[in-house]
Image 1 (cartoon, helix red, strand yellow):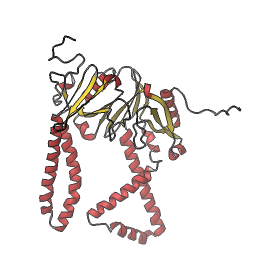
Image 2 (cartoon, rainbow, N blue to C red):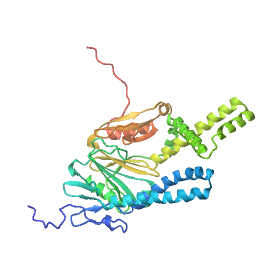
Image 3 (cartoon, rainbow, N blue to C red):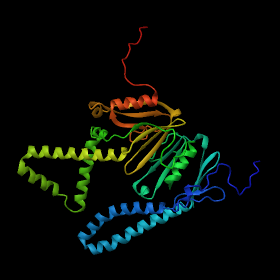
Length: 382
């Protein structure tokens, strides 16, 4: 028997604290220490649904307007967009009202649902990852999504979260950092944004962008862009425009020159696309080693990501040299660890993007304690 009053929160239970001091947080703790998600989630959902609905509304308006009138088209489309956004906002409001979480001395708990309720919890001693991510709209409102897991087959920030992962979507950024420090037993972030005892192993260098186009993604993204262009022209009833333009260019400069010109434009589009994607994914990249044995990767321009990897789960590192990057003397570094999904479509296991080999070797040495390379020795004769 602990002798505690049942109305008091258990020892170590998270209270509203500084995170609830945020005037827009709406995460005040009740008598049992339960906290709500941030109330601005409704605004975030409404903003995203409006953008998506607008993307579908434009071609729909053009299609209806070309057959009747644009006034008639808007009379149908505008109310439909409003209805979709309102329905999404109401649904997210219901989700918010019926979602709550708390941290006890021994467990992290999450309850959600109104008709079909879900109650899940993780033992704190098993928690190995507390990853933060924020899309552009969430960043405007100062929010983050927190993924809390045991490190067993998770894909940070990716689809199909493991049953061993609890997702708080969203909470205030300060609350997310506080939860990370609490659940991973890390020192809290100081008022000036610094973290005591953190060692930076690698940082972002814009010159690394030159390696991004040296990939098959350059041609894949260019193909996607061309396909998207044809789709947009089809929406506006101008599907014959590329044929007409090609014919005019051939008559002007000849077939061979036209082929070379279009090939150059195709590659240029791919290069720009890969640069843009790489810039968004790896901007402000930083690899840190925190006290207590945790590697933390921070990156992202529009959508920020923070992935934590317990060093006790690290089994090694892999220096990956794709053909294009290898020809330029570059490589990326992936971590080999128990529990982190090695999905080739995911960058959750990447510690370093494509960078000069010297940087890759330095990061590999800092993480694994060995420097790659050296001469191979002949196997001894039996």
